[in-house]
Amino acid sequence: MSLALTQHRQRPFKQVDVFTATPYYGNPLAVVLDGAGLSDDEMQRFARWTNLSETTFVLPPTQAGADYRVRIFTPGTELPFAGHPTLGSCHAWLENGGKPRQADVIVQECAVGLVTIRRAGHHLAFAAPPLKRSTPAPELLASVAQALGISTAQIRAAQQLDNGPQWLGLLLDSTDTVLALAPDHQALKDLKQKVGVCAVESAQPAISLIAKSSREARAFAEHAADAPQHAAPDLEVRAFAAPVGVTEDPVTGSLNASLAQWLMAEGHLPERYVASQGTCLGRAGRVQLERDASGQVWVGGQVVTCISGQVQL
Image (cartoon, rainbow, N blue to C red; front, side, top):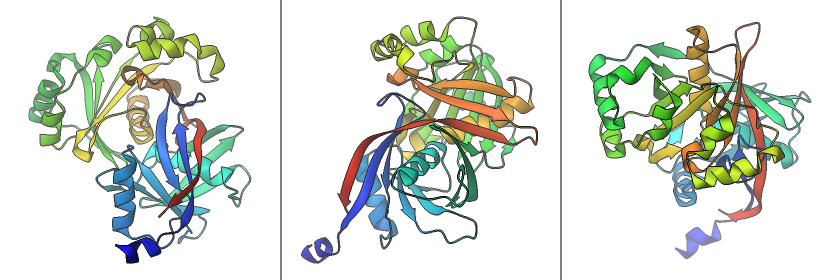
């Protein structure tokens, strides 16, 4: 035990909040800004200890053209790619003095390859990785619907989505249905199925949708004027990831990326929209989605630093 302790050293560390301009209303991320020399087990152990949906470790790049490399861990496993850790790690790296090769374009290396991130003021957006999608089996939809507590008739469209992380994407009949879900998380874990649900917002103002969900969200509504990302959302999203140890993720970049690629392609949403996520957890995440003229989908938002210091690892 004493030998293990002598190998530890102080490393720069930040905890940031992603997809929000207001601290503690987005999705938190732990970032170890110097992961050199840490083993896989040490990274996984620390990620389990932080107990956040993701913890990242920044390392020197190994691929030409990358500004830095990042490894992404949930409390239970390593991910090849994830959205909010991409933006959060980039923000932390820049704030810690990182200098990209191009002033407003950052290239991150991760297990899926190189991911381009654009910077415009306080706003960061990553290029969504290529998406593979397919139609899920009716038997799976029936089992997932039962675990969610809804009927299959309430599912307007469904796709298996894979952009590194894999999700079963469900477009439901209304935002009320999405916000009222109380899933059987053990059933979803037994199905080994991460599920992303969404619904297109009605004309009802977004603040009232948030207000009726929870007391914490109502508190946010009182301070909405303080947040630049208070535009009325077009899509309400929830992410259930019991198979990787996260019952509900507050705001999920990879899921929103794949939902946008699917829903835009099928004409369910326009080429630019805002997604709301985290409402039922007392969060007010805002994800900005845009498809450019080349067909590339960009997933963006703001990041704020909540904790900055050193960690002994």
